[in-house]
Image (cartoon, rainbow, N blue to C red; front, side, top):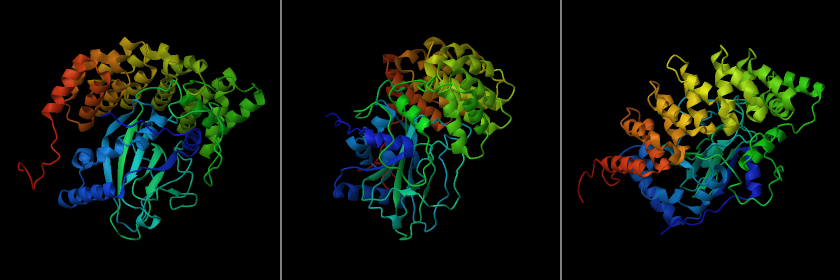
Length: 471
């Protein structure tokens, strides 16, 4: 019996996701389903503690949640039809009357440059009725693209909470600022957090799109900063366009100079708007962004990279030239922008491969490991580079390589022997994403290695310290 047809998001929901970075939605399971799910959660947490990454196999009914057409439709709309469930997952238990701190989740460390384009998303699922008093997750709307918090640490004005009946879930841009809110009732509250990654770049809208033109949503959350050019670029990117802003604004020397100066603005939303405005101003805007990339301020350099990532093919040559910069961060930012430009930056692959030498700074190697698959061609050179990354001494380079190979599909069949070795890596995520890569490669040789690995490591959800063998 196949899965039900996904219930895709509509245009208005997608516009809200692009601007605000989250949606609060609800599944259609029965009350009895959630009662049974809660019984399983309570039993496991009381007898065994938090099952961590084994949450899904340990709580047997939980897979039904992630097969639900409302959830698969939401994820398909944002991440495309072949999204990946990350091997890290976590059941958050909260009975604290104190709020958690505002934060962004890491990508196993905080050195990775975050994508404005939605390559990643999270589902935060609430299996019990979760009124505000029970401490649902809170998110700060519109903050998914901000490196800084832009609001005070204890500020709650404008906060949105994932409050609702059992089956309510928050679909969030992976990088949004969020926190746990106070559980003033002191009763058990579960939030089941799962991470997802896009494995294919968008070529067309994957939601129920009736109008391809960008429009702002009918209403905003309070206190949200406007980013018209950035939102438009993200919408177009989700519709399959790369560098859609390029040469879309009339070049005006005064406007270029004004925007270039605003890259240094201490208020991050202003600086980001400047970067995207410059991305639309042709070569003059690109040159200003390239100058910003080399700015002594790392914040200005990073912000300029976001503009260059949206500036189209005209930015490639300058970014390639920046790969030889002495400052590590400048190189990292240039590599990031080249990756976001995807196949437009194919000419940079030879230089990127040179950056995989062991003597190169490890953060550069980590960034290259992701950028290679985003660019994707020439395929043989990209796969060869990712095989090298699987053998890197740095565990995070190896971890990223597995995720990157998921994006290469059957074209990465040459990586199967290296992935087979990676299945024995000391790190759980290197092993987990090697298995995922074999699944997405999907050739006969990949399936053979994957099936043998899964059979040898088969998980029995009924085996616990209280029930080791029988019944």
